[in-house]
Image 1: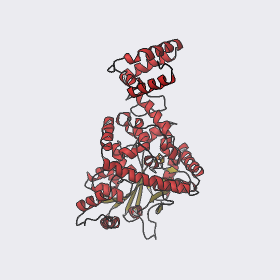
Image 2: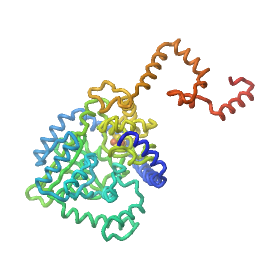
Image 3: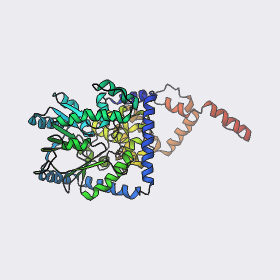
Image 4: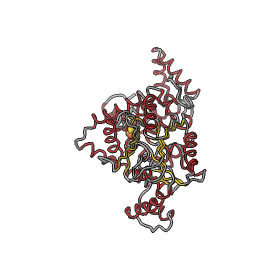
Length: 475
Ligand code: SF4
């Protein structure tokens, strides 16, 4: 999506009262649930410090830990694949499926698979992929993408979902009863699980020490995807690594509380390989696909690396005054909200997503709420700078400098010259305060200045009256 389309999409979203009401209602609920939990004696600051330390430790040793993880997983019977790009990732998945002659797949929630556009890639090969997470299933029925990383169908209300299910599911009865709608989806999905050749899942944390893939979920669909079909393919970004198992509880605690306001998630799956001899369930074959897609470039920059701490809880979205008004479909790429504003310009490049770091008032609500302490505000400012002019990081941000213009560079050079010579600065200020208002409003580069700097009529009158009453001159 070219960057101007983000602006256009925001204007359109702001004019949609139903969308805004759906988001407002959902976000208010999530904010208060989270606040209640952290107010109940749960000590936020030490827990957050533990979570941040676990992620910082993993990032400090990432290349070594990834190699150790691979070795441990192989020892556990898992086949590990590395993909530098999303095309490579999709090819790897297609090859695994072709070897098994697989034609049907079920997929648990995985944002990385969304990033890869995996469903499209497989459907183009004639493979049926059914989303097994209820929210993902709903948006798949409507051929949409997720609007939130935790609650993909959050932009829809009950009535819209009831209508969609009635229209898209064969023999469905119209019902706005949540239990009946859920039962209908379960009925369809059970049959899909039974006949699936492959099950896909995401990964929340990949533990190096034990070679364990940790997966949290609320519906049980993740457990079904990873145990019922004969082949399980887990997909993760290379930043999901955690060194030790004892670091996981703090991260799980932070993740579920921050994401949905739950003290603990309904299912925590700890997967350490395919079915072993004598075991009654589990896949015959298990694969892990580790995707880079620009993450190595992010990792190479010591400041921007903090982006990779993210545990995808979505709390920054729920608290963001921009996201809560425009919704997730406005953003280019699959990660919306504050995390999308720092991640997508680095993955897609400044040309495609360079407007995102500017779509922020820098209120820092996201920084304050982030359970692993990512300095989102600082990274937004850094990426704004990269948009105008590449800084000297170890590896340039993709498309750095794409937003800079010769006119802007000239203005800033002039400003630097004025600002660094006190006499010239005083003379310029003297001239601007006296003659600034004489600049015609159409003058390029100065119209916004004169518009903002001119005192509004109301203010001028009020000031004049106040000055008169006080017996002083307001000149
Ligand atoms: S940036 Fe922080 S708050 Fe936002 S999704 Fe990631 S971990 Fe959660």
